[in-house]
Image (cartoon, one colour):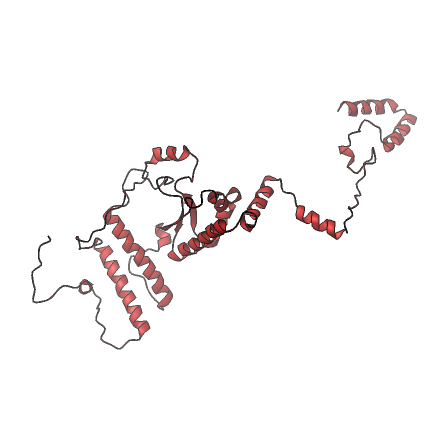
Length: 320
């Protein structure tokens, strides 16, 4: 049992009363927008003061949530201690509130010493889990990545985030164990094979995170409820893959051209100079036959005494 608190004639101390240089009592009439802006300003100053004085851990030790599984970086240093988690939570809240204040309050100035998130390199992360257990026959990874990873790269560009596939089954067997052996089983640099298959989203703002989550959920829903024959996304990916590999055949354009010609075959204007076939002369299989224009040229050379040169030239062609 925690020790009983002593009764005081002065009452309980409020956390709001500890704010330095900022009054929390509203003594003048204000509109609802002004009240919201002032409450936002007070909360930003409160978090700034906590971060400045390093008072990030709540004072209530009774209702303490269980600690998560420890995580380590590549150097073996733990990165999710209780202090780090509470400080990161306050920093995330302050970043979000400051962005809201900059959008809603005219001529708002950030607190002294505040550094924007894109300058610090600190990013927000979130996860979208892939239902592989419910639909084991569906190739989620292939349709999310697309040909050579182009579909996932397009989603990264449209949402302004970085989306990677992590979890069990995200890499080939053996590669994940080799990486975990280098960086440790709980390292953030690993492929997180101890977790279910998911998409890890990283961005600077929560708005970009939400946009990427909506895009991923739409793709996953389309993959699940749409048959392969009617899945336009998969058909387009197969088409793009054939174009990349150089095996694409435009059968649709050929069918349209056949209908345009009224069902008849198109005439070709390519004619071989040796056999008269519908191919170029250099591809003719009967190149040993002397073409007519060479016969005429040979007669002229023979008259000029060059028949021996022509014979040697034809012999060279036959050897080639």
